[in-house]
Length: 168
Image (cartoon, rainbow, N blue to C red; front, side, top):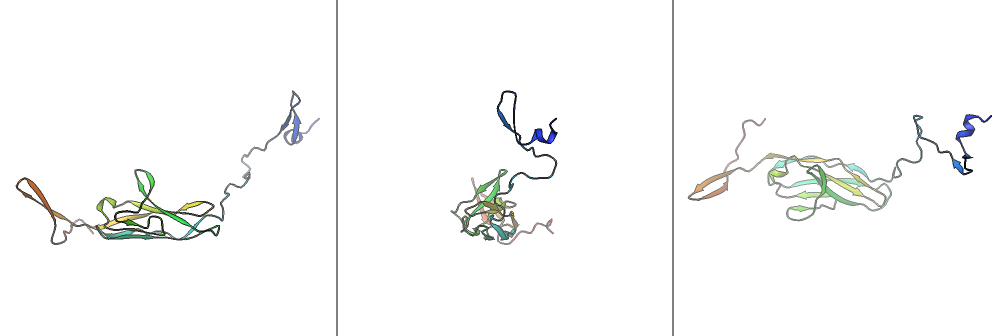
């Protein structure tokens, strides 16, 4: 009589005479088959994460990271913004510079960017790693006075800051 362990391991013949290899099935044993993280130790590692930026509308926002390449090769960078539930690459142009460096600069920050998360993806020859996200926080804005002159509307910056009494 064949023991159960002999029937489930190694090579055996089926009814048609073909050799069958028994395969290990990963079950509740807590054992892992193979290396589940082939990039362990090779990933770029962020030693400085970007931090939230707070400032007035139309100020300049700056985000910086510092990264060590896990595999010792040079790094490339790509800054991204979270837009419409997707991380989208930021491109240089207009008031944006440094989109592919370790420092992102956004000049003339518009109120529409308030609450927008940004992050940096660092890439070496082995793999890519995203940083944690940082948020743009607008603490004050420039208010405009709208004046109707005949059939046109003229807008001009208010001469003094308007304080919202609901603010802390």
